[in-house]
Length: 474
Image (cartoon, rainbow, N blue to C red; front, top):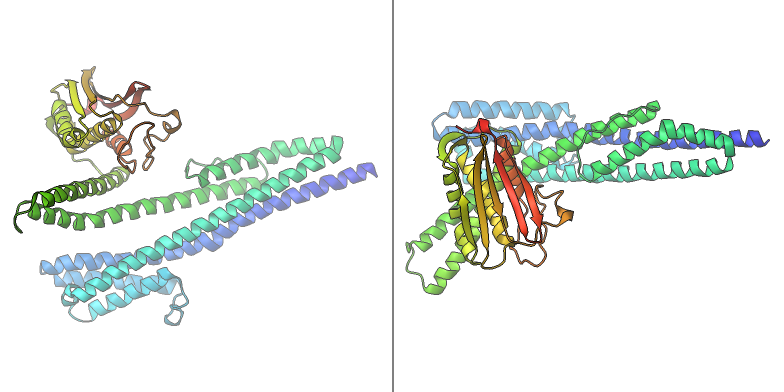
C-alpha cells in the first residue's frame, strides 16, 4: 500500500505538473490565436488606411504642381486597396459600428477617399474643412492603434502573471510530493528537475526579462515537447512585442516630426518680436522674450534630437563629407554651449585639438560633442572648468571631456547611455533632462563606426571619451 500510495502521489504530481504546463501553453496559445491574429488583421487595415493618408498628402503636393491626374490615380488606388482589405477582414457596412476603433477609423478614411475621388480631387484636397477633417482622422487612427497596442500589452502582462503563478504552484506541489514520497519522490524530483524544472526556470527568467523590456532572443532549451513549444511561443511573442516596440518608436518619431512645423513658426514669431518688426519692446519685455526664445530653442533641440535618434536607429545613411576638422568640430560644439554655461560661470578649456580633417557628418558630430559638454557643465560647480582634450594616435582621433562633478553613481552606469535614463546627481542642481544626450552621442559615434564611453569617474569628476577609427579619417 505504501508503494501504491507513493505511486499515486507521483502520478498526481505528474498530472498536476503537466496540467500546469498545459495551462501555461494554453495561455500563450490564446494570446497568439485570439490577440496576435486579430492584431495582424487590424494591422493590415491600419496600413491600408495610412496609405490613404499618405496618398492624400502627396496628392495635395502634386495638385500644387499641376499633376491632378496622378494625385487622383494614387488616391483611387489607395481607396480600392483599403476597401479590399476591409472586405477581406470581414467588415461590412452593418458591422462597422460594432467593430474596433481601428476599423471605424479606417472606414472613415475610405469614406474620405470616396468623397475626394468623386469630384474635383484637387479642389477637395485643398478645402480647409476637408484638410481639418483629414488631420482629425489621422489623430483618431493613431490614437486607436496606440490604444489597441496598450490593450494587447495589458493582456500579455496578465497572461504572463498567470503563467508565473501556475509555475509557482506546480513547483510547490512538486516539493510537497518530494517530502511525502521519499525515495520515489526524490527520483521523480531529480527527473523533473533535469527535464522540466530547469527549462521552465530559464523560460520564466526569459519571460521576466521580456516583461522588463529586454528583447534578447529566448533560447528554446531541451525538454518535454510542451516546454519546447512554450519556448518557441515565447520567442514568437518576443518578436511580436519587439515589433510593437518598433512601431512605438516610429510613432514617437512621427510625433516629433509633426512638432517641427509649429516650433518653427513659434521661432519665427519670436524673431519678429525681437527684431522690432511689431514695435519697440521695453527692457522687461526683452527679458521675457529672451526667456521664451531660450525655451523655444530647447524644444527645437529636443525634437531634432528625437528625430535624429530615430533616423540613426533606423539605419538611414549619414550625410558624410570631408569639409571640417577635429578642431573645428570642437570649437563649434563649445560655441553652441558657451552661452548656457556662462550663466553658471562655467568655462571650457581646450588643451589640445588636432587640425586633422575628418570624413563624417560634421553637424551630428558637433551636436554629439555638445551633448557631452552640456552634461559636464551641468554637474560642475558654479565657476568651474570643463576640460576638452583631443588627440590623434595611430589613426584614431579621441576626444575627452572632463568635468569636476561628484562622479557617476555606480547604480546608474549600466543604463547611462540608454534613452530616457536621466538620473539626479547628488549635491548638484542640474536642469531637467529627458536623458537623451548620451544616448544620442553614442548613436552618432556608432553610426560613424566609433563609440562613446565613460573612461573615468570618481569623487573628483568624470571623463567621457569619444573615439573615431582610422577608416573615417581622410
